Each structure stands twice: as C-alpha cells, then as structure tokens.
Length: 531
Image 1 (cartoon, rainbow, N blue to C red):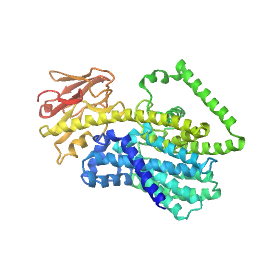
Image 2 (tube, rainbow, N blue to C red):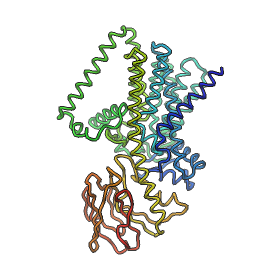
Image 3 (tube, rainbow, N blue to C red):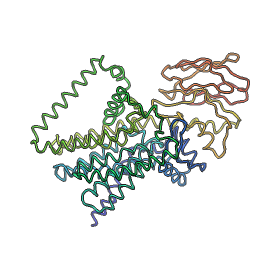
C-alpha cells in the first residue's frame, strides 16, 4: 500500500520535474502576440468566452477560465502562465503513459515490455520538438487543455471498458465535454472513443457509447453556434472547408513528417519544394522504402502469423487514432521548417509517439540495445527542442524590449509604428496584440490611437531597416530582402503609395507631426524622425 502511494506521488512529480527542466529556458520568457489580446482582456475584467467573429469565431470557455485563474495568482507575471502550460504538458505526458498501458495490455507483450513501451512513448511526447508552439507559447494552452481532457476521457473510457464501474463512463463524458469547451479540435473525440471501443472488443456497445459522446458533441455545436452566430466559426469557411485534394495531400504529408521529426532545415526546401524534380528526394524516398521493407522482413522472421496479427491490430488502432485526431486541423497551414502551426499536431503526436515506441520494442528484442537506441532518440529530441525553444525566447526578448521602450516614452494621443515585427522565423512576435500590449497591460492606456503601417517577417532580430525622408515622402527599406513587409495599410496620417517585399513608399500628412513615429531596426524601436 505504501509503495503504491509512493508511486502515485513520485511518478507525477518526476514528469513535472522533467517538463520543467525541458522548458526551463522559457519560463521567464515574456508574452507574445495573442497572449496580449486574451490575457489583457482578462486582466481588465473582460471574460468573454467567444471572440474573433469577424473571420469566423472561437468559443473556448475552459481556455478563458484557465486565464482567469492564472490572472488572479500571477497578474502580469508571464512566468506563472508559462509554468501552468508546462504543468499541463507534464500531466498530458503522464496520461500518455497511462493510456499506453491500457491500450498495450491488449497486445501480447510481457508486463515489463508493456510498461517500458508506455514510459518511452510518454518520454518521447514530453520532449517532442514539435511541441514548442503548444507549450512555450502561452496562447497554445487551448491545445494543451483540449488534449488533456481528451486523454483523460479516453483513459476513463478504457478503464470502464475493462469492467470498471459505470461511473468511469460518466467521468469520460464529463472530460469529453470539458475538452470541447477548451478547443473545438476535440470534436474528434467521439470517433477516437469508437475506434478504441472496437479495438477493446466492445462490439455493438461501442456504437451505443459512441452515440452518447455524439450527443454531447451535438449539444456543444448548438451552444457554440448560438454564441458565435455561425456553425463553422474558427478561421472561417474558406479555411476549414477547403478539401482540395492537393491541399489535403500536402497537409497530410507535412503532418506525418512533423509528428515524428522536428522542423526540417530551411536548406532542404530547395529539393522539397518540387520533389519530383529532385534526385536527392528520390534517394531519400528510396532509403525510406528500403528501411520499411527491412522492418517488414525482420518482423516476419521474429514473429509467427498469430503474433503479427495481434501486432497489426494495435498498429491499425494507433494509425487510425492518429488520422482521426488530425482531421479537425487537416485544412490548416503547417510548416515543415518552422514552428508555425505545429500546435495543431499536439494531440496527434500522442499516437505517433505510441507508434514509434511500440514498433521499436517489437523489433529490438535486446533490452539494453533498445534502451541505448531510444535514449539516443530522446537526446536528439531534447537537442532539437532546446534549439526551437531558443527562437521563442529570442522572440519574447523583442516583445519585452518594445513594450519596455514604449512604456518609457511620453504619453501622446497617437502612436505610429512603421514596421511592427510580425514573426521571427515563424514564431509570432506581434502578429497580433501590439495595440493591446500598449493599451491593456499598463495601469492606464498610454496612447489613444495605435497605428501600424506594416508588419515585418524577420529572419533575425538584428535585421536592419532604413528610413529615408524627403519632403512629404517616407521610404522604409529592409536591407535583407528576407525580412519582408506584409499587411501594409494606410492610416489617417500616412498614405501607402507603393510597396515591394523589402520596401515601402509612404506619403506623410501634417497630422503626423503630432504623433510619436517609430520604426523597428536592429532589435529595437527608434524614432523615425523628430516631430
């Protein structure tokens, strides 16, 4: 009894400690982009659970509730919000272990191998380098919470399916409802439960249980549509209802790659952009096919037909769970080379990690060799996770610098920023949230009007941008064309005359003399000219 209690306390503590160590470099990072919008609203007493109706809309009460709780404890201290994200990620990793044990118990593995595979899947998930956007970005919490409740629901359902009390099924339904209220991507949960039930040989009972989860889903859709005034919502029908075969094919391939590997080197884009015209791509594809063939041949030598049939059931289960969990985000943009969009893969990577761990343990029969190889895999993941987190930390230094600089400037009616940093190598800086950072985070608003003439994609925080003024003309030029301008717009005091990726031409109005005008260059804001 004491040993069991000891494990119940120590195992979660170890997961939490591991998660803190993995993301320690970002615990003191500042807010980024959407953080300023949502947390700023909550700090000022706006607890709206829906927003973004102009392009579709989101309805996430549990997500906003988590911000309300954090704001009461941490106020404007970003450390606490990051700590909450890391704690949820640690809990999710623990759920991966428990769910892995439940599902692997149906496969003919020794108890030791079963637990080793589940532990390894949880470790791979905890250190997965494609989790930076979900964990390191505070606004990625919606995916953390939705995944947490989805895994809790599946775990409770699997426990119920193994002849546990019916209260476990009721608990699974409650967790399922909470998942939907955290993020809409949890709409896949009824189908995850259905496949799990069929795998656990629930037969027609699995269909009844699926119907119960579906009723909750229908109720959620109705309430959400009532609040948003739209059924699709999200990023709009143009995005979510885009089922063009080429688009879906590319997103699926990118998702498979990023659910197992970190962001690829940017240099690889030269042969992946048009793969069928690249000899190197064919060599990589051939190597991959040879490896798969070797795995199939080796498995046939190691296991008889009955054992392979049991293995195939589990492999099909995990592949099905991966594809179903990916469906809500299959239309959304994902990058092979940056963190952009990888938060959409947070739930699917649960099943890719289970797949990697299971395949490795059935193919590598020597325990010591298996442990060495998987330790190397974890070391690789840790290294790439650290490298990805460094970019997020660097981006947060920019937001801290800009908000700090503007907090010390004289208060004026109008602030004009010629080129707000949009993102740093895919990490959102002020893609959203700059006006809110200046108007909601201080004790009182410092500027009545915040104009942003353009946003700039950065490859380096120290990229140089030049401003030239001639009569009533203003020219903004990026010295490195990779630091491109985007989302340009005119304002009351500045008229956009023309632009390219690396240059803006603006006509100034006399009212600009009454505004504070700044531009971003070399990692800092500077005055464009003396008013």
